[in-house]
Length: 93
Image (cartoon, rainbow, N blue to C red; front, side):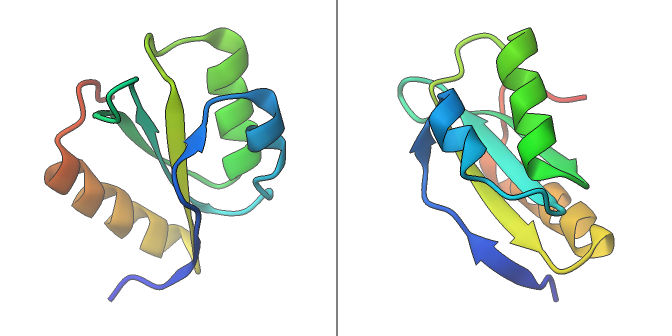
């Protein structure tokens, strides 16, 4: 069973909200204006990964995001896979 330490509600896609996310392992979901999932990703550092997406603008149409802090890398991998199949995002790796 996946251990989620903390789950953040959906937030607006801006630098201020990204700065509030800690440097922890976890999973994030990026959403468009209608809150449809665009992308699900796993990372060892949530804040840095979200900051990179923001600065490089590599996924078009992001307006919101949500994060999950997991207990371990293994939990993050499992949660990413589960959310990918549940949410069916528009983009994938």
